[in-house]
Length: 136
Image (cartoon, rainbow, N blue to C red; front, side, top):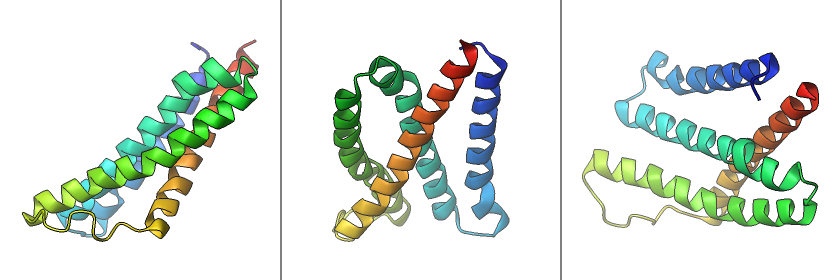
């Protein structure tokens, strides 16, 4: 994993993540939105590295495909709820109001988060496959 390709993939991933995080600053958005962007980006990166460092090497690279897809599906079903809980907590702390904490949570919101975390999982798994393929 000490290959140049692996290092470049990590640099590219973190560069895009940092750029997407600082966009609200340049658009003059309030601090609440910037903090939400930071939380979302860090959560996305955590999912990416969960798949890059653990799920893909333990299951996908060992050709345990049923285990990989089953574990991925279960993990990706739970992670949007955790991610949105962190965002709701941030919003409640900024507003100082914890009433109706999950009132705006919906199935559409969960599916949106599922797509985002699935994309992070796909990128993490695919980049791990690429790094392993080109280092052999």
